[in-house]
Length: 455
Ligand code: BES
Ligand code: MN
Ligand code: MN
Image 1 (cartoon, rainbow, N blue to C red):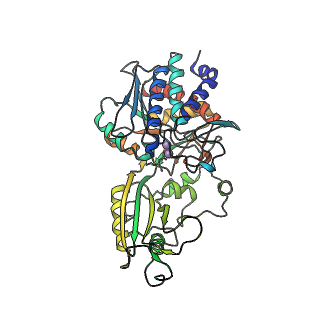
Image 2: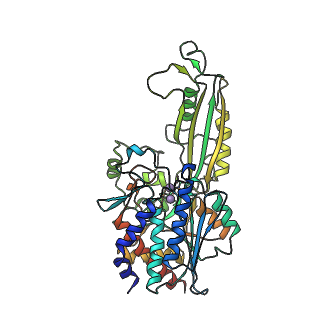
């Protein structure tokens, strides 16, 4: 039997196994789910052994565990290190799901569950491709798996693990499926990711909540002030006004921008899918550029005062917001964090106190298109999809990619199979059965072409 025949014959089994994994609510951000996160790690460890790994182990960290497994068939052959994550984002708000997030259902050829796409579904394709290659004696590369449980909370402990296990993780390439393709008609390979700097801010006015009639109009309202401060951080052209923010931003050449905008993109379809009349972003850039190569500043949450039922007349003492900045080459997240803190304090008027503290961050990444691994990924798409994939820059962040380069000296191939419409991080996250099956096929082909082109 060929690898591709094995994949075809085992479609239902592969789906059933993924559904079992999706039933484990491995939410890394919420300590209520700590035991479930470990259960998911144990599930992956066992799945690796069942698929044919020589060894598979749970590696303890200061946080959630990392699963490591490998099969070395011949040290003289190239080694592929697969990275993925088995943790998921919180499923809140639960009431917006059409079916419970941890009770996966298949509807219209799609699997609905938290993590169906990001990243359980995409990560699990690698274990199944490995199983198929192993079962049909078709492994062409050594394979190592490093599957973490803290991607959605910043991968702090993975960074430590990588630094401490350079030899164990030695490989020729890192292979990751945790990104998107343009569409099922237009496959693509991600060659750029944005970085991230994530802040929490607090503005304090009076020393206690006040009656908004007795004091209103005479004392600064920290929520009003915070809104003004946030508004002032972006001008009418969508430029961020933090001094120095753009100093290191790499500008693309006219040619590079032209190539980027040659990718198929239907603005009307985009607006329709989001139910918006118009898009909005930095002047002078297209939508593809705005998410691919330009930095951002966005409020992710804002709160303070009274938000319960009915009305309470209160002039609050404090206001808060969580603010993210997506970064592009060659911005540095620590530098941007410092610039933000300085600026935020400098624009606070005398009648409030302002404080900004950083959460996790990460560096942007670009991956080469002139490498053997890129050529292998491209050949795999050509064989499986009958089309040459287009290189694209995604707006999301996988901070560990730049760390792999820095610590292990390794480039990553970002061979994702999700769609932007899969609703990752949102209610009703889903993953197409087509993408799941095609992904497994394409991954197996990658191993074949990578070995061939590495010779
Ligand atoms: N898989 C995503 C990142 C992603 C999504 C990249 C779509 C490209 C296209 C990843 O799990 C993620 O959500 N990353 C976080 C960053 C992390 C530090 C919390 C993000 O981008 O917000
Ligand atoms: Mn992910
Ligand atoms: Mn995610």
